[in-house]
Length: 247
Image (tube, rainbow, N blue to C red; front, side, top):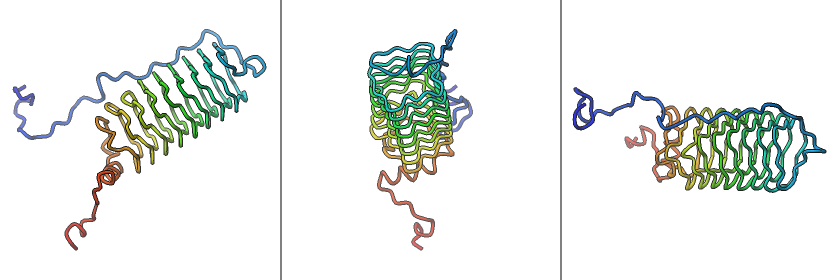
């Protein structure tokens, strides 16, 4: 290489497209650690309550909607077909949990955390996970429209195939998040930290806080919608060719 860091024979001023794919510092989320055995939970014995701890339980087809509890801990638990819609779980912790085909619509969880969790085909419309932490979490094929993750920190988190239309990430730290094949139409990113955030094959039309995306990485096929949004945020008017030529 020459002193300027260019390959020998490369002409000065030629754009360089890296041949390396991905961020070498990025690590995929760790998978949840499965329990050695799983006991079936019942509403009578395992209803939600303050400071309750649930370990190695299967919450299958249980109705736990409309509950309110503080400081609940779930360790190596599995949720399938459960209903926690409208439930409030402040200060909750989910560690090594699997959540499948479960209803979490309008769940409110402030100051809560997930560690090594996977959520798939979960209804999460209107969920509020505010001022929390997500670490080593995969969210796949979930409906998260109108959700809120304000002031939440994301560490090795992947959203794939999710509906995140009008989701609110205001003031969130998304530097450890990746979005693949997601609908982010009208999502809000104002004041978010996004250096290192990656978007691939996502719908970014009409997003808010686009000027907070400094340092984010966007796939080239996603740039058209993003460029129109950025132009609007900067007060740039886009004209057709005839208008630009004065026709």
